[in-house]
Image 1: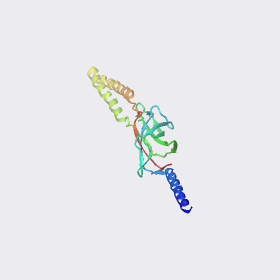
Image 2: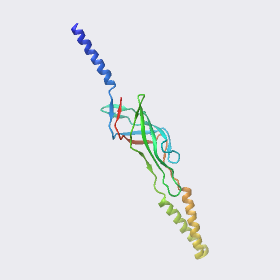
Image 3: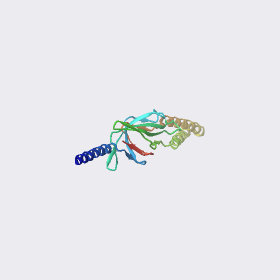
Image 4: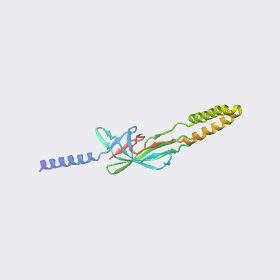
Length: 192
């Protein structure tokens, strides 16, 4: 009876150890990059701070030879900064963060750095459009009406240049669906 008991005990410990191993937690370290593809389209013109968005993991995360975060895992994010482009002054910006991830039916909170961009300032392009319009107007006015015509032409040209800059000045940040974005974990992620 002693041998049977010992063999039975050994088998129970082995089975229990294997089943506990299947539920062992794995930690994805801080600093790990999560590559995700947007499900939702995002725009600095349409989205507002605090709005949620959905994405899915594009590149699986492997720790110690084990896939901890599978490709296709759903990720939830939030808009942290959104400014629509102004016509003459305000450059657009759109920044995002991830807030949670769903793995094997469980949702885990995430803390990531921000990802996004700010468009370039309109100032240089606007100066060129307005100044170019004024110069062209002055030349045309000088040809048509001399010194007085040049003055009138430069004012008219500057007005046309300003109108052109205002009409073409908006350039919002756009992230279409399927856009690949990368986020960096600020804190470790422990997955069961």
